Amino acid sequence: MCGSSVIHIMFSVIFIVILFGGLCQASRHVSVDIINDIVPNVQLALHCKSKDKDLGSQSLVPHQHWGFREAINIWETTLFFCHFQWGSQSKWFDILVTRRDQYICEHHPCVWSIRPNGPCRLTGQEQCFLWNAE
Picture 1 (tube, rainbow, N blue to C red):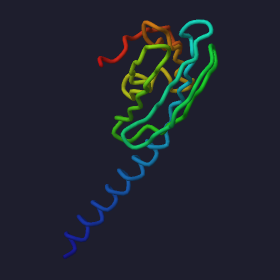
Picture 2: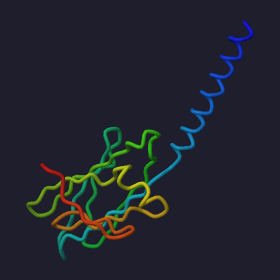
Picture 3: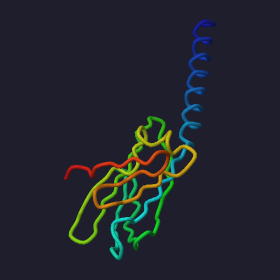
């Protein structure tokens, strides 16, 4: 009886430590800032969401910013994707991928310049990406 009580207490302590550690990890956030850098005088429509959260539709005039801030889940699988439209163009891009962005954008927003050839992350060293395959 005494041995099983010690094991039960040990498992309870381990569970609490894991739970507390997970809650601390869940409090990490990443901010995303999106800039319309398509071309002069072209409005950019965008709609960003994750599998669980819809951030709604936005419309940005040239060089206008819009952004959001999201918690990183404990599994570090947080993913937000955006649909961008301008003129006759329609493109998709994964704007927040935890494993790609979390350390680069840990202390500063992930600033994305949306350009016709693809989005460029300006935070840290500028890096441009291709649009997602349709």
